[in-house]
Image 1 (cartoon, rainbow, N blue to C red):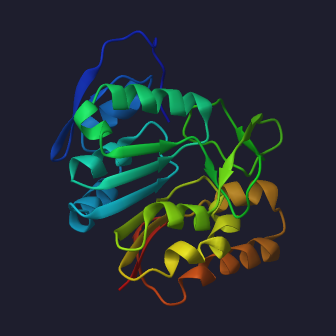
Image 2: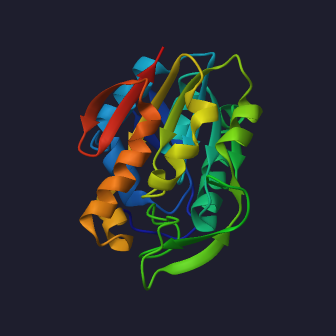
Length: 239
């Protein structure tokens, strides 16, 4: 997604719609796109519409923190999960550059997963590139990630918060969603889901099996209203 530069570079200011952020990661090309208003404008507009003080924003697949930082700027309490150690380090540098926002962001160095225990994680190009996944393609760079379950996250959040969940885990959503009940059953819950059928196809070649995996994942939203925001991106709302 982005080029790298040396980690010693000074933080730069980037305007992200209604917020000005300081970024200290290794993703200058990505942040140039943000500054031009070209990175996921539908996502950012949705966050502005849905998030206010009193909202808990659960960022599953936080990468270097663009949505976590923006949600915090909008007043949310943020729980950000990132299992790629290179991305995690860059996320922590971005939080250090934004101490007022960092005070509202809890970072968990975990992969959200249906079960507890270590899982194989990998990046098709290189760690930190925003494409890390539990769907490890042949030839990927791999490592072991610690996990946390949806039930454990639900207990951590508490019962009273208005909840907005962003799921962008590069194909891991197909296995995760059937286990999301402890979070999805809550009233007044919104879910922004990014689907990655291309990544699924790298590990399940047989089209009927991919269709079964997709139907099984989306069955978690039986009681939700849904609308498509962008190709492969959906908002599910439960009131």
